[in-house]
Image 1 (spheres, one colour):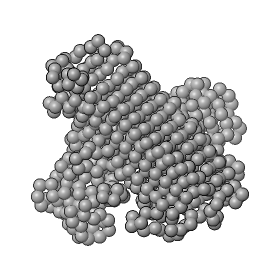
Image 2 (cartoon, rainbow, N blue to C red):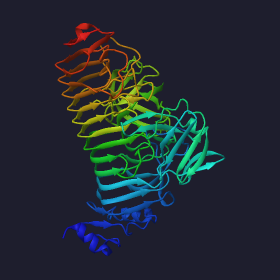
Image 3 (cartoon, rainbow, N blue to C red):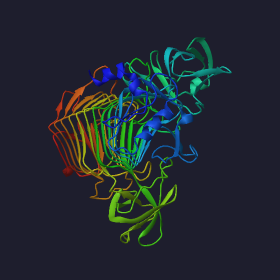
Image 4 (cartoon, rainbow, N blue to C red):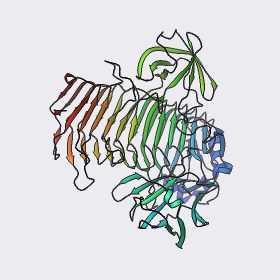
Amino acid sequence: MNRFSALIIVPALLLSLTVASQQRISVNMPPNTFKDATVKVQEAIAACRNIPGAVLEFQPGRYDFYPDSAVKKTYFISNTSDEEEVPDKIKTIGLFFENFKGLTIEGHGASLVFHGKMITWLFDHCEDIRLRNISVNAERPSMSEMTLRTVTPQQVTAVIHRDSRFAILDERLEWYGEKWKLQQFHAVLADTAKGMYTYSSWSPFYKSKAVLLAPGVVQFTGDFSSFKGVPGNILTVRDGIRDQVGAFMQHCRNIQLENINMHYMHGLGIVAQFCENLHYSGVRIMPASHSGRAMASFADGMHFSGCKGDITITGAHFKGLHDDPVNVHGTHLQIAEKISSRVLKLRFMHHQTYGFAAFFAGDSIMLVHSAALQGYGMAKVADAKMLSPREMEVTLDKDVPAATRIGDCLENITWTPSVTIRNSIFEGVNTRGLLVTTRKKVVIADNTFYRTGMHAILIADDASSWYESGPVQDVSITGNTFEGVGYNQSPDNYVIAIAPENHELVPGYMVHRNIRITDNTFKLYDYPVLTARSTGHLIFRNNRFTWMKDYLPAGAERAAFKLTACEKVTISDNESSLPFKPEVQLEQMSRKELRTDLTVK
């Protein structure tokens, strides 16, 4: 008899809080009651606290979690919200783990269903944690969806998804949920048949007259002359405020996520902030099969801010997101004041990122000229403290260079991870597939990027917009397939973009270096393939180009490769069955810095 059979035959064994010989603790509540399981699950979590190696178990089935009995705690989370958007940073948390070590959470396929706007699970200062075999969903997603039935310049008829609650008040459709009402409107149009997700607008619907024709069927009358939707498309609408995140980890080490289905997440996604060694295997961020939903994430899929050690993502599947599936970065803090030769006052500059300690005693830092993104001095942090949610004070172990200016930035080069992403699928997104900026080794191998709306891969680094650091020094992009990407970004719809935001070019200084793009397949519908700026030792070799007929019309003829202020670049030995010969465009660089068998413009 296997263990699953035992769970079915003797369910009474799981109805009490028990510690088995294998240190197994079960939730003291049967599944499928549709009652609030939050308190019982937190009791089971508490029972695991002083048992190293404990296994917290769920029975297969459904467990419901409600905000009223959830843990409430203040967290400042990167890339989420500013002081005006969300003044109160108190988060609402379903499964809360703090200061745990050596714990396995075994879901046995359980479905955790969340009500209202919540963080589904949170690990704070935890170590050696394994979360596996669970599915996460929302009773009423904060994303509203409707399928277009008819579209004319004056009228649209749509079928509202059964999970999207709405009311027609004074002839206008209003979206609402469990203790919330949609007040801002960010819309994406999903053509699920073509796998294309494009920016749209709720404005013509908001201004129109809405009439209920039948249960779940609404007719909108107004000005739809500029609306781009066609019958069969799904219009998806959400708020713009990231008041919660899908899941959160902070100051954790050795976290494994295995066989996890995130069928819907409210907010930024699975966020890891100042964590070390994260291993994700078989994490699927996509709507549940037969749900009829188009979207699984309010924003990003996985977000890594200021992490270190090894990040590995294998066998992931991203489909139906309103923002980037994966983003890996650090945070530049700007020098606001030079208090003394070794003491600097720093400031968080982006409006949605602030409030958390970004430097710690013992960390190594790089001083960076913001406009050029040029590192010019290293030191160690002797002391660091928060002055306010927006400001930190750091004391260094030596004097800063004389070249240090107000407005320069500090990058934390201790908290930078190595990243490996393999055998994963990126699709169903109107933005990029993958963003990565880290000094450590990066391997992006054997993945499929299918019709991402923007660049499949973006390597940025900036100290003027998002303030997301830093430079890359060792990147391998190999064995991947890129099909029909970039349709939301023409004419700059490059499949891969190496695009640091350096507004000053320093002769001989490369922001990024050692990027190898080899043995990939590019299925193109337009001319652009690769753009790179301020990049040294760039190799694009042994790749294959094919042409996608009857997908999208090609834009104006232009170079497949655009290189700006780069050094030591090789583009050669690539196979092409394109209806044109790829060309290379050079800007602000010498021809001698390029080795290629293509025509150079």
